[in-house]
Length: 558
Ligand code: ADP
Image (cartoon, rainbow, N blue to C red; front, side, top):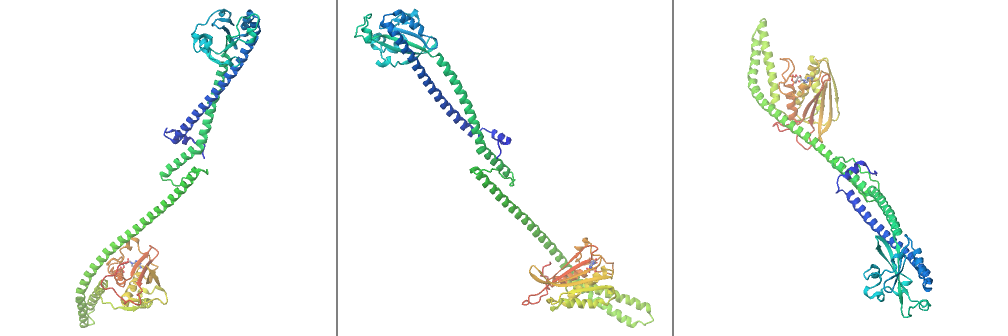
């Protein structure tokens, strides 16, 4: 836990509505009120006690004065009484002594000048002892025991506080039996002794004591407040500020931030719970983000699939209309061409051997007509106008047959065939001559690309695509490969890079159509300089299903 981090203090200082301010204000106020009450009661009690001690000390002094004057009174030695009183007084103890007779006349006084004066009825001194000042001494209200336990009253005399004691002087046996005296025995009280004890010293001391206690109280309260504040800060406010700071950081998105409160109290538990909560939150957020990413990926894949499907659909539509057109044109041209070739042959038979020029011209006509016928066949193949027979065929046999057919042709003399054919390959359903035509197209294209020199690798295997069994035929060559910009146009009818008169651009389009009609796919992969690789996939029919060659264009393109 951090001790008074500056940042936290600044946050706490921000508002008087903050918890720290309220707590400190409330506890500080309580400490102040409690301390004031405590120190006030201490000062008050000690003042009372000091006053009692002073009063008891003063009583001792008064008793002493009474006893020392008693003998002089019995001996009627009035001057000595007066002198004793004068010598007994001092500024900081008994400051004034007066003895009154029954009529209120001052018989003796520490201040000799007051002797003989009479107090008038409303005098403060009279009020101390008389309930009714007009009835003189008979109405004295102090108790009979006052002589031994005088009552002290604090009064203000000449602007100074004094402790005044007024005690009755009783007519004792020694008084009324004394030779000098004339007081009758029935008379109970002979007069009053009034003594003033100066409180100057007392006030001075209590003032010092008050200042000392107040100073001590203030320092004690301040130190206690500071200590309490520190404890409060460390135990409550600082953790709360740390929690608040952590929550603010988390609310800005940083869920890695951990609240560092390592106490075992409620705040420590709160921090621990909060930390595990942010971890959970982070975990959930990551999960959500991952889901969102996966969803985005899925959407992108599906969008691409839809786009591909659309493109494929447009392509299929294009091919279908081209096919229909090609079929119409091919059909119309086929009969006249057959006629041209037939009649050219008949004409050739009639021309004598020595007429070489005419014969050569006729040979050109036949050759060109046969070329046209070949193109028309291609167009018919592309449009599927040619009839198809449904058979169960062995792909390996077809490949071997196709290789045997062309291997002896001049074009393939320098081409090496490398066939890696998987044994026990399942049969597929289809028309063998059409599928063979596909392989022948691929071999011829490979030989053309390699300039009739190189090797063609053929591999067959059984694979599964989306859980469905297929026979895959891979035809790769060691030619120059296909440039990337040509790849997307490869299966378009009439796309060719071969010189005019050599290529028709129908080979792959026808092959594509044939494979598609068999429910298969044909795809190409190639990197320039690394040869071309064609993948032909034909579905393996379910033994319970009938072999079906789709002649109605219902199969989906891959
Ligand atoms: P054609 O053979 O009449 O040109 P195709 O449809 O059979 O028509 O082929 C189209 C084009 O595809 C070819 O002109 C050629 O550029 C390219 N091609 C086909 N097979 C290969 C291959 N194995 N290597 C390089 N290019 C090829």
